Length: 319
Image (cartoon, rainbow, N blue to C red; front, side):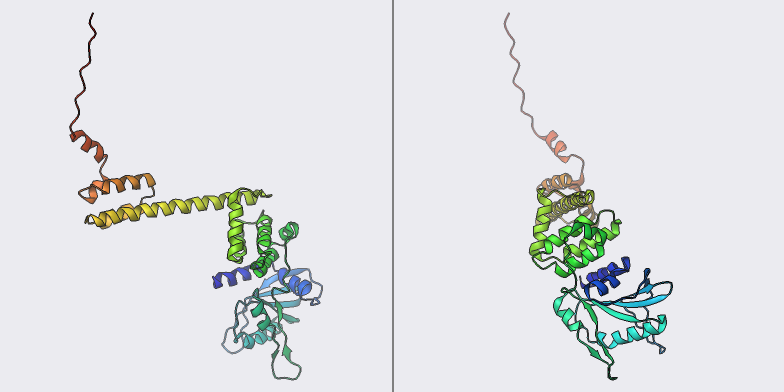
């Protein structure tokens, strides 16, 4: 899960490069030069010596030419090696693009954010790197649907930073409502990131609300998403019932000492027809071989061999 969270956070900034300067300016109060474009730059920060370093993401701000560069690092846990490489990232990037640079560390966990914010003294007088950290205290609580629709990446980041708080369910619901019009893969990722960041209680409450039918979704997307969630749930239940019937069938055959060959086992395992599985299960109680399960209407043949009760003669009325 940690890898998915890390890559998901990086994708938020890759999908919306302006998210990095917005956080630096609006959440952390860093003055930025005027710029007209923000674009993702190569994150390879290789030294002259053959050692390769790669930041999570580099965002370059341009006003005709590079005016500011941001190294974006996602940090989900403490990693002492980062305190050695972060200064290198900045100096290497500054040398490459020829403009001021800053380090933005995104840490949704409060304890990790505090660790990331510790100064990194480099030994030279006055040369101390103070990482700029976007932790839960700096990431806004976004519950306005219009604001979330204008900046869905920030809305997802808000859910990831505050999902375990009491307001987490409200933020996640805002994210879900705000994703109308986004591409399918992007929607799936953002929904996963938002829902996976909730506390277990909040996630259960939100899923129960979505399944109850008592909440009226405002957007066509959420109505479709709810339908898809319900369909997936029903498919999961159906699959569970199929697995149960398959397991019961194999258990009965094993208990009766009937050897299940590989082909028969595969046929049972691949059967998705619940009614057919139930028929095979009933047959397994009396079948003399596994192959008898798959015969066409064996019950009818057995019935034809049974003794029939003669019908009573029809009475004729006297004239």
